[in-house]
Image (cartoon, rainbow, N blue to C red):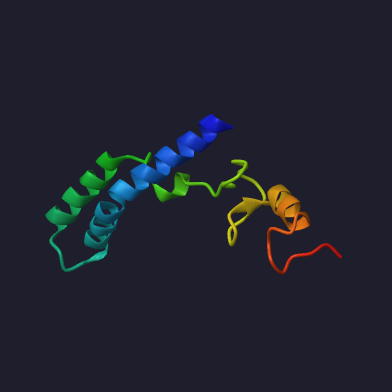
Length: 97
């Protein structure tokens, strides 16, 4: 599980590094008032960035266990960890009926 956490962390770091450049190039592609040759150059530059730093590869993972399924995005923990912590009284306002 540790290697998956490390891989996801690396993907998040690559995304953070290229996020502003990706957004700028995307805005250039959308704008029709910019000449076609500049937009084509922006397209090729965006293709060279690759997919490794793309936001679509970033997964929601539990910060405690690293589990990728059943993660509540509000608290960033999986359903299993949420149940354990709720039963232990670590979350306010959550109780078992």
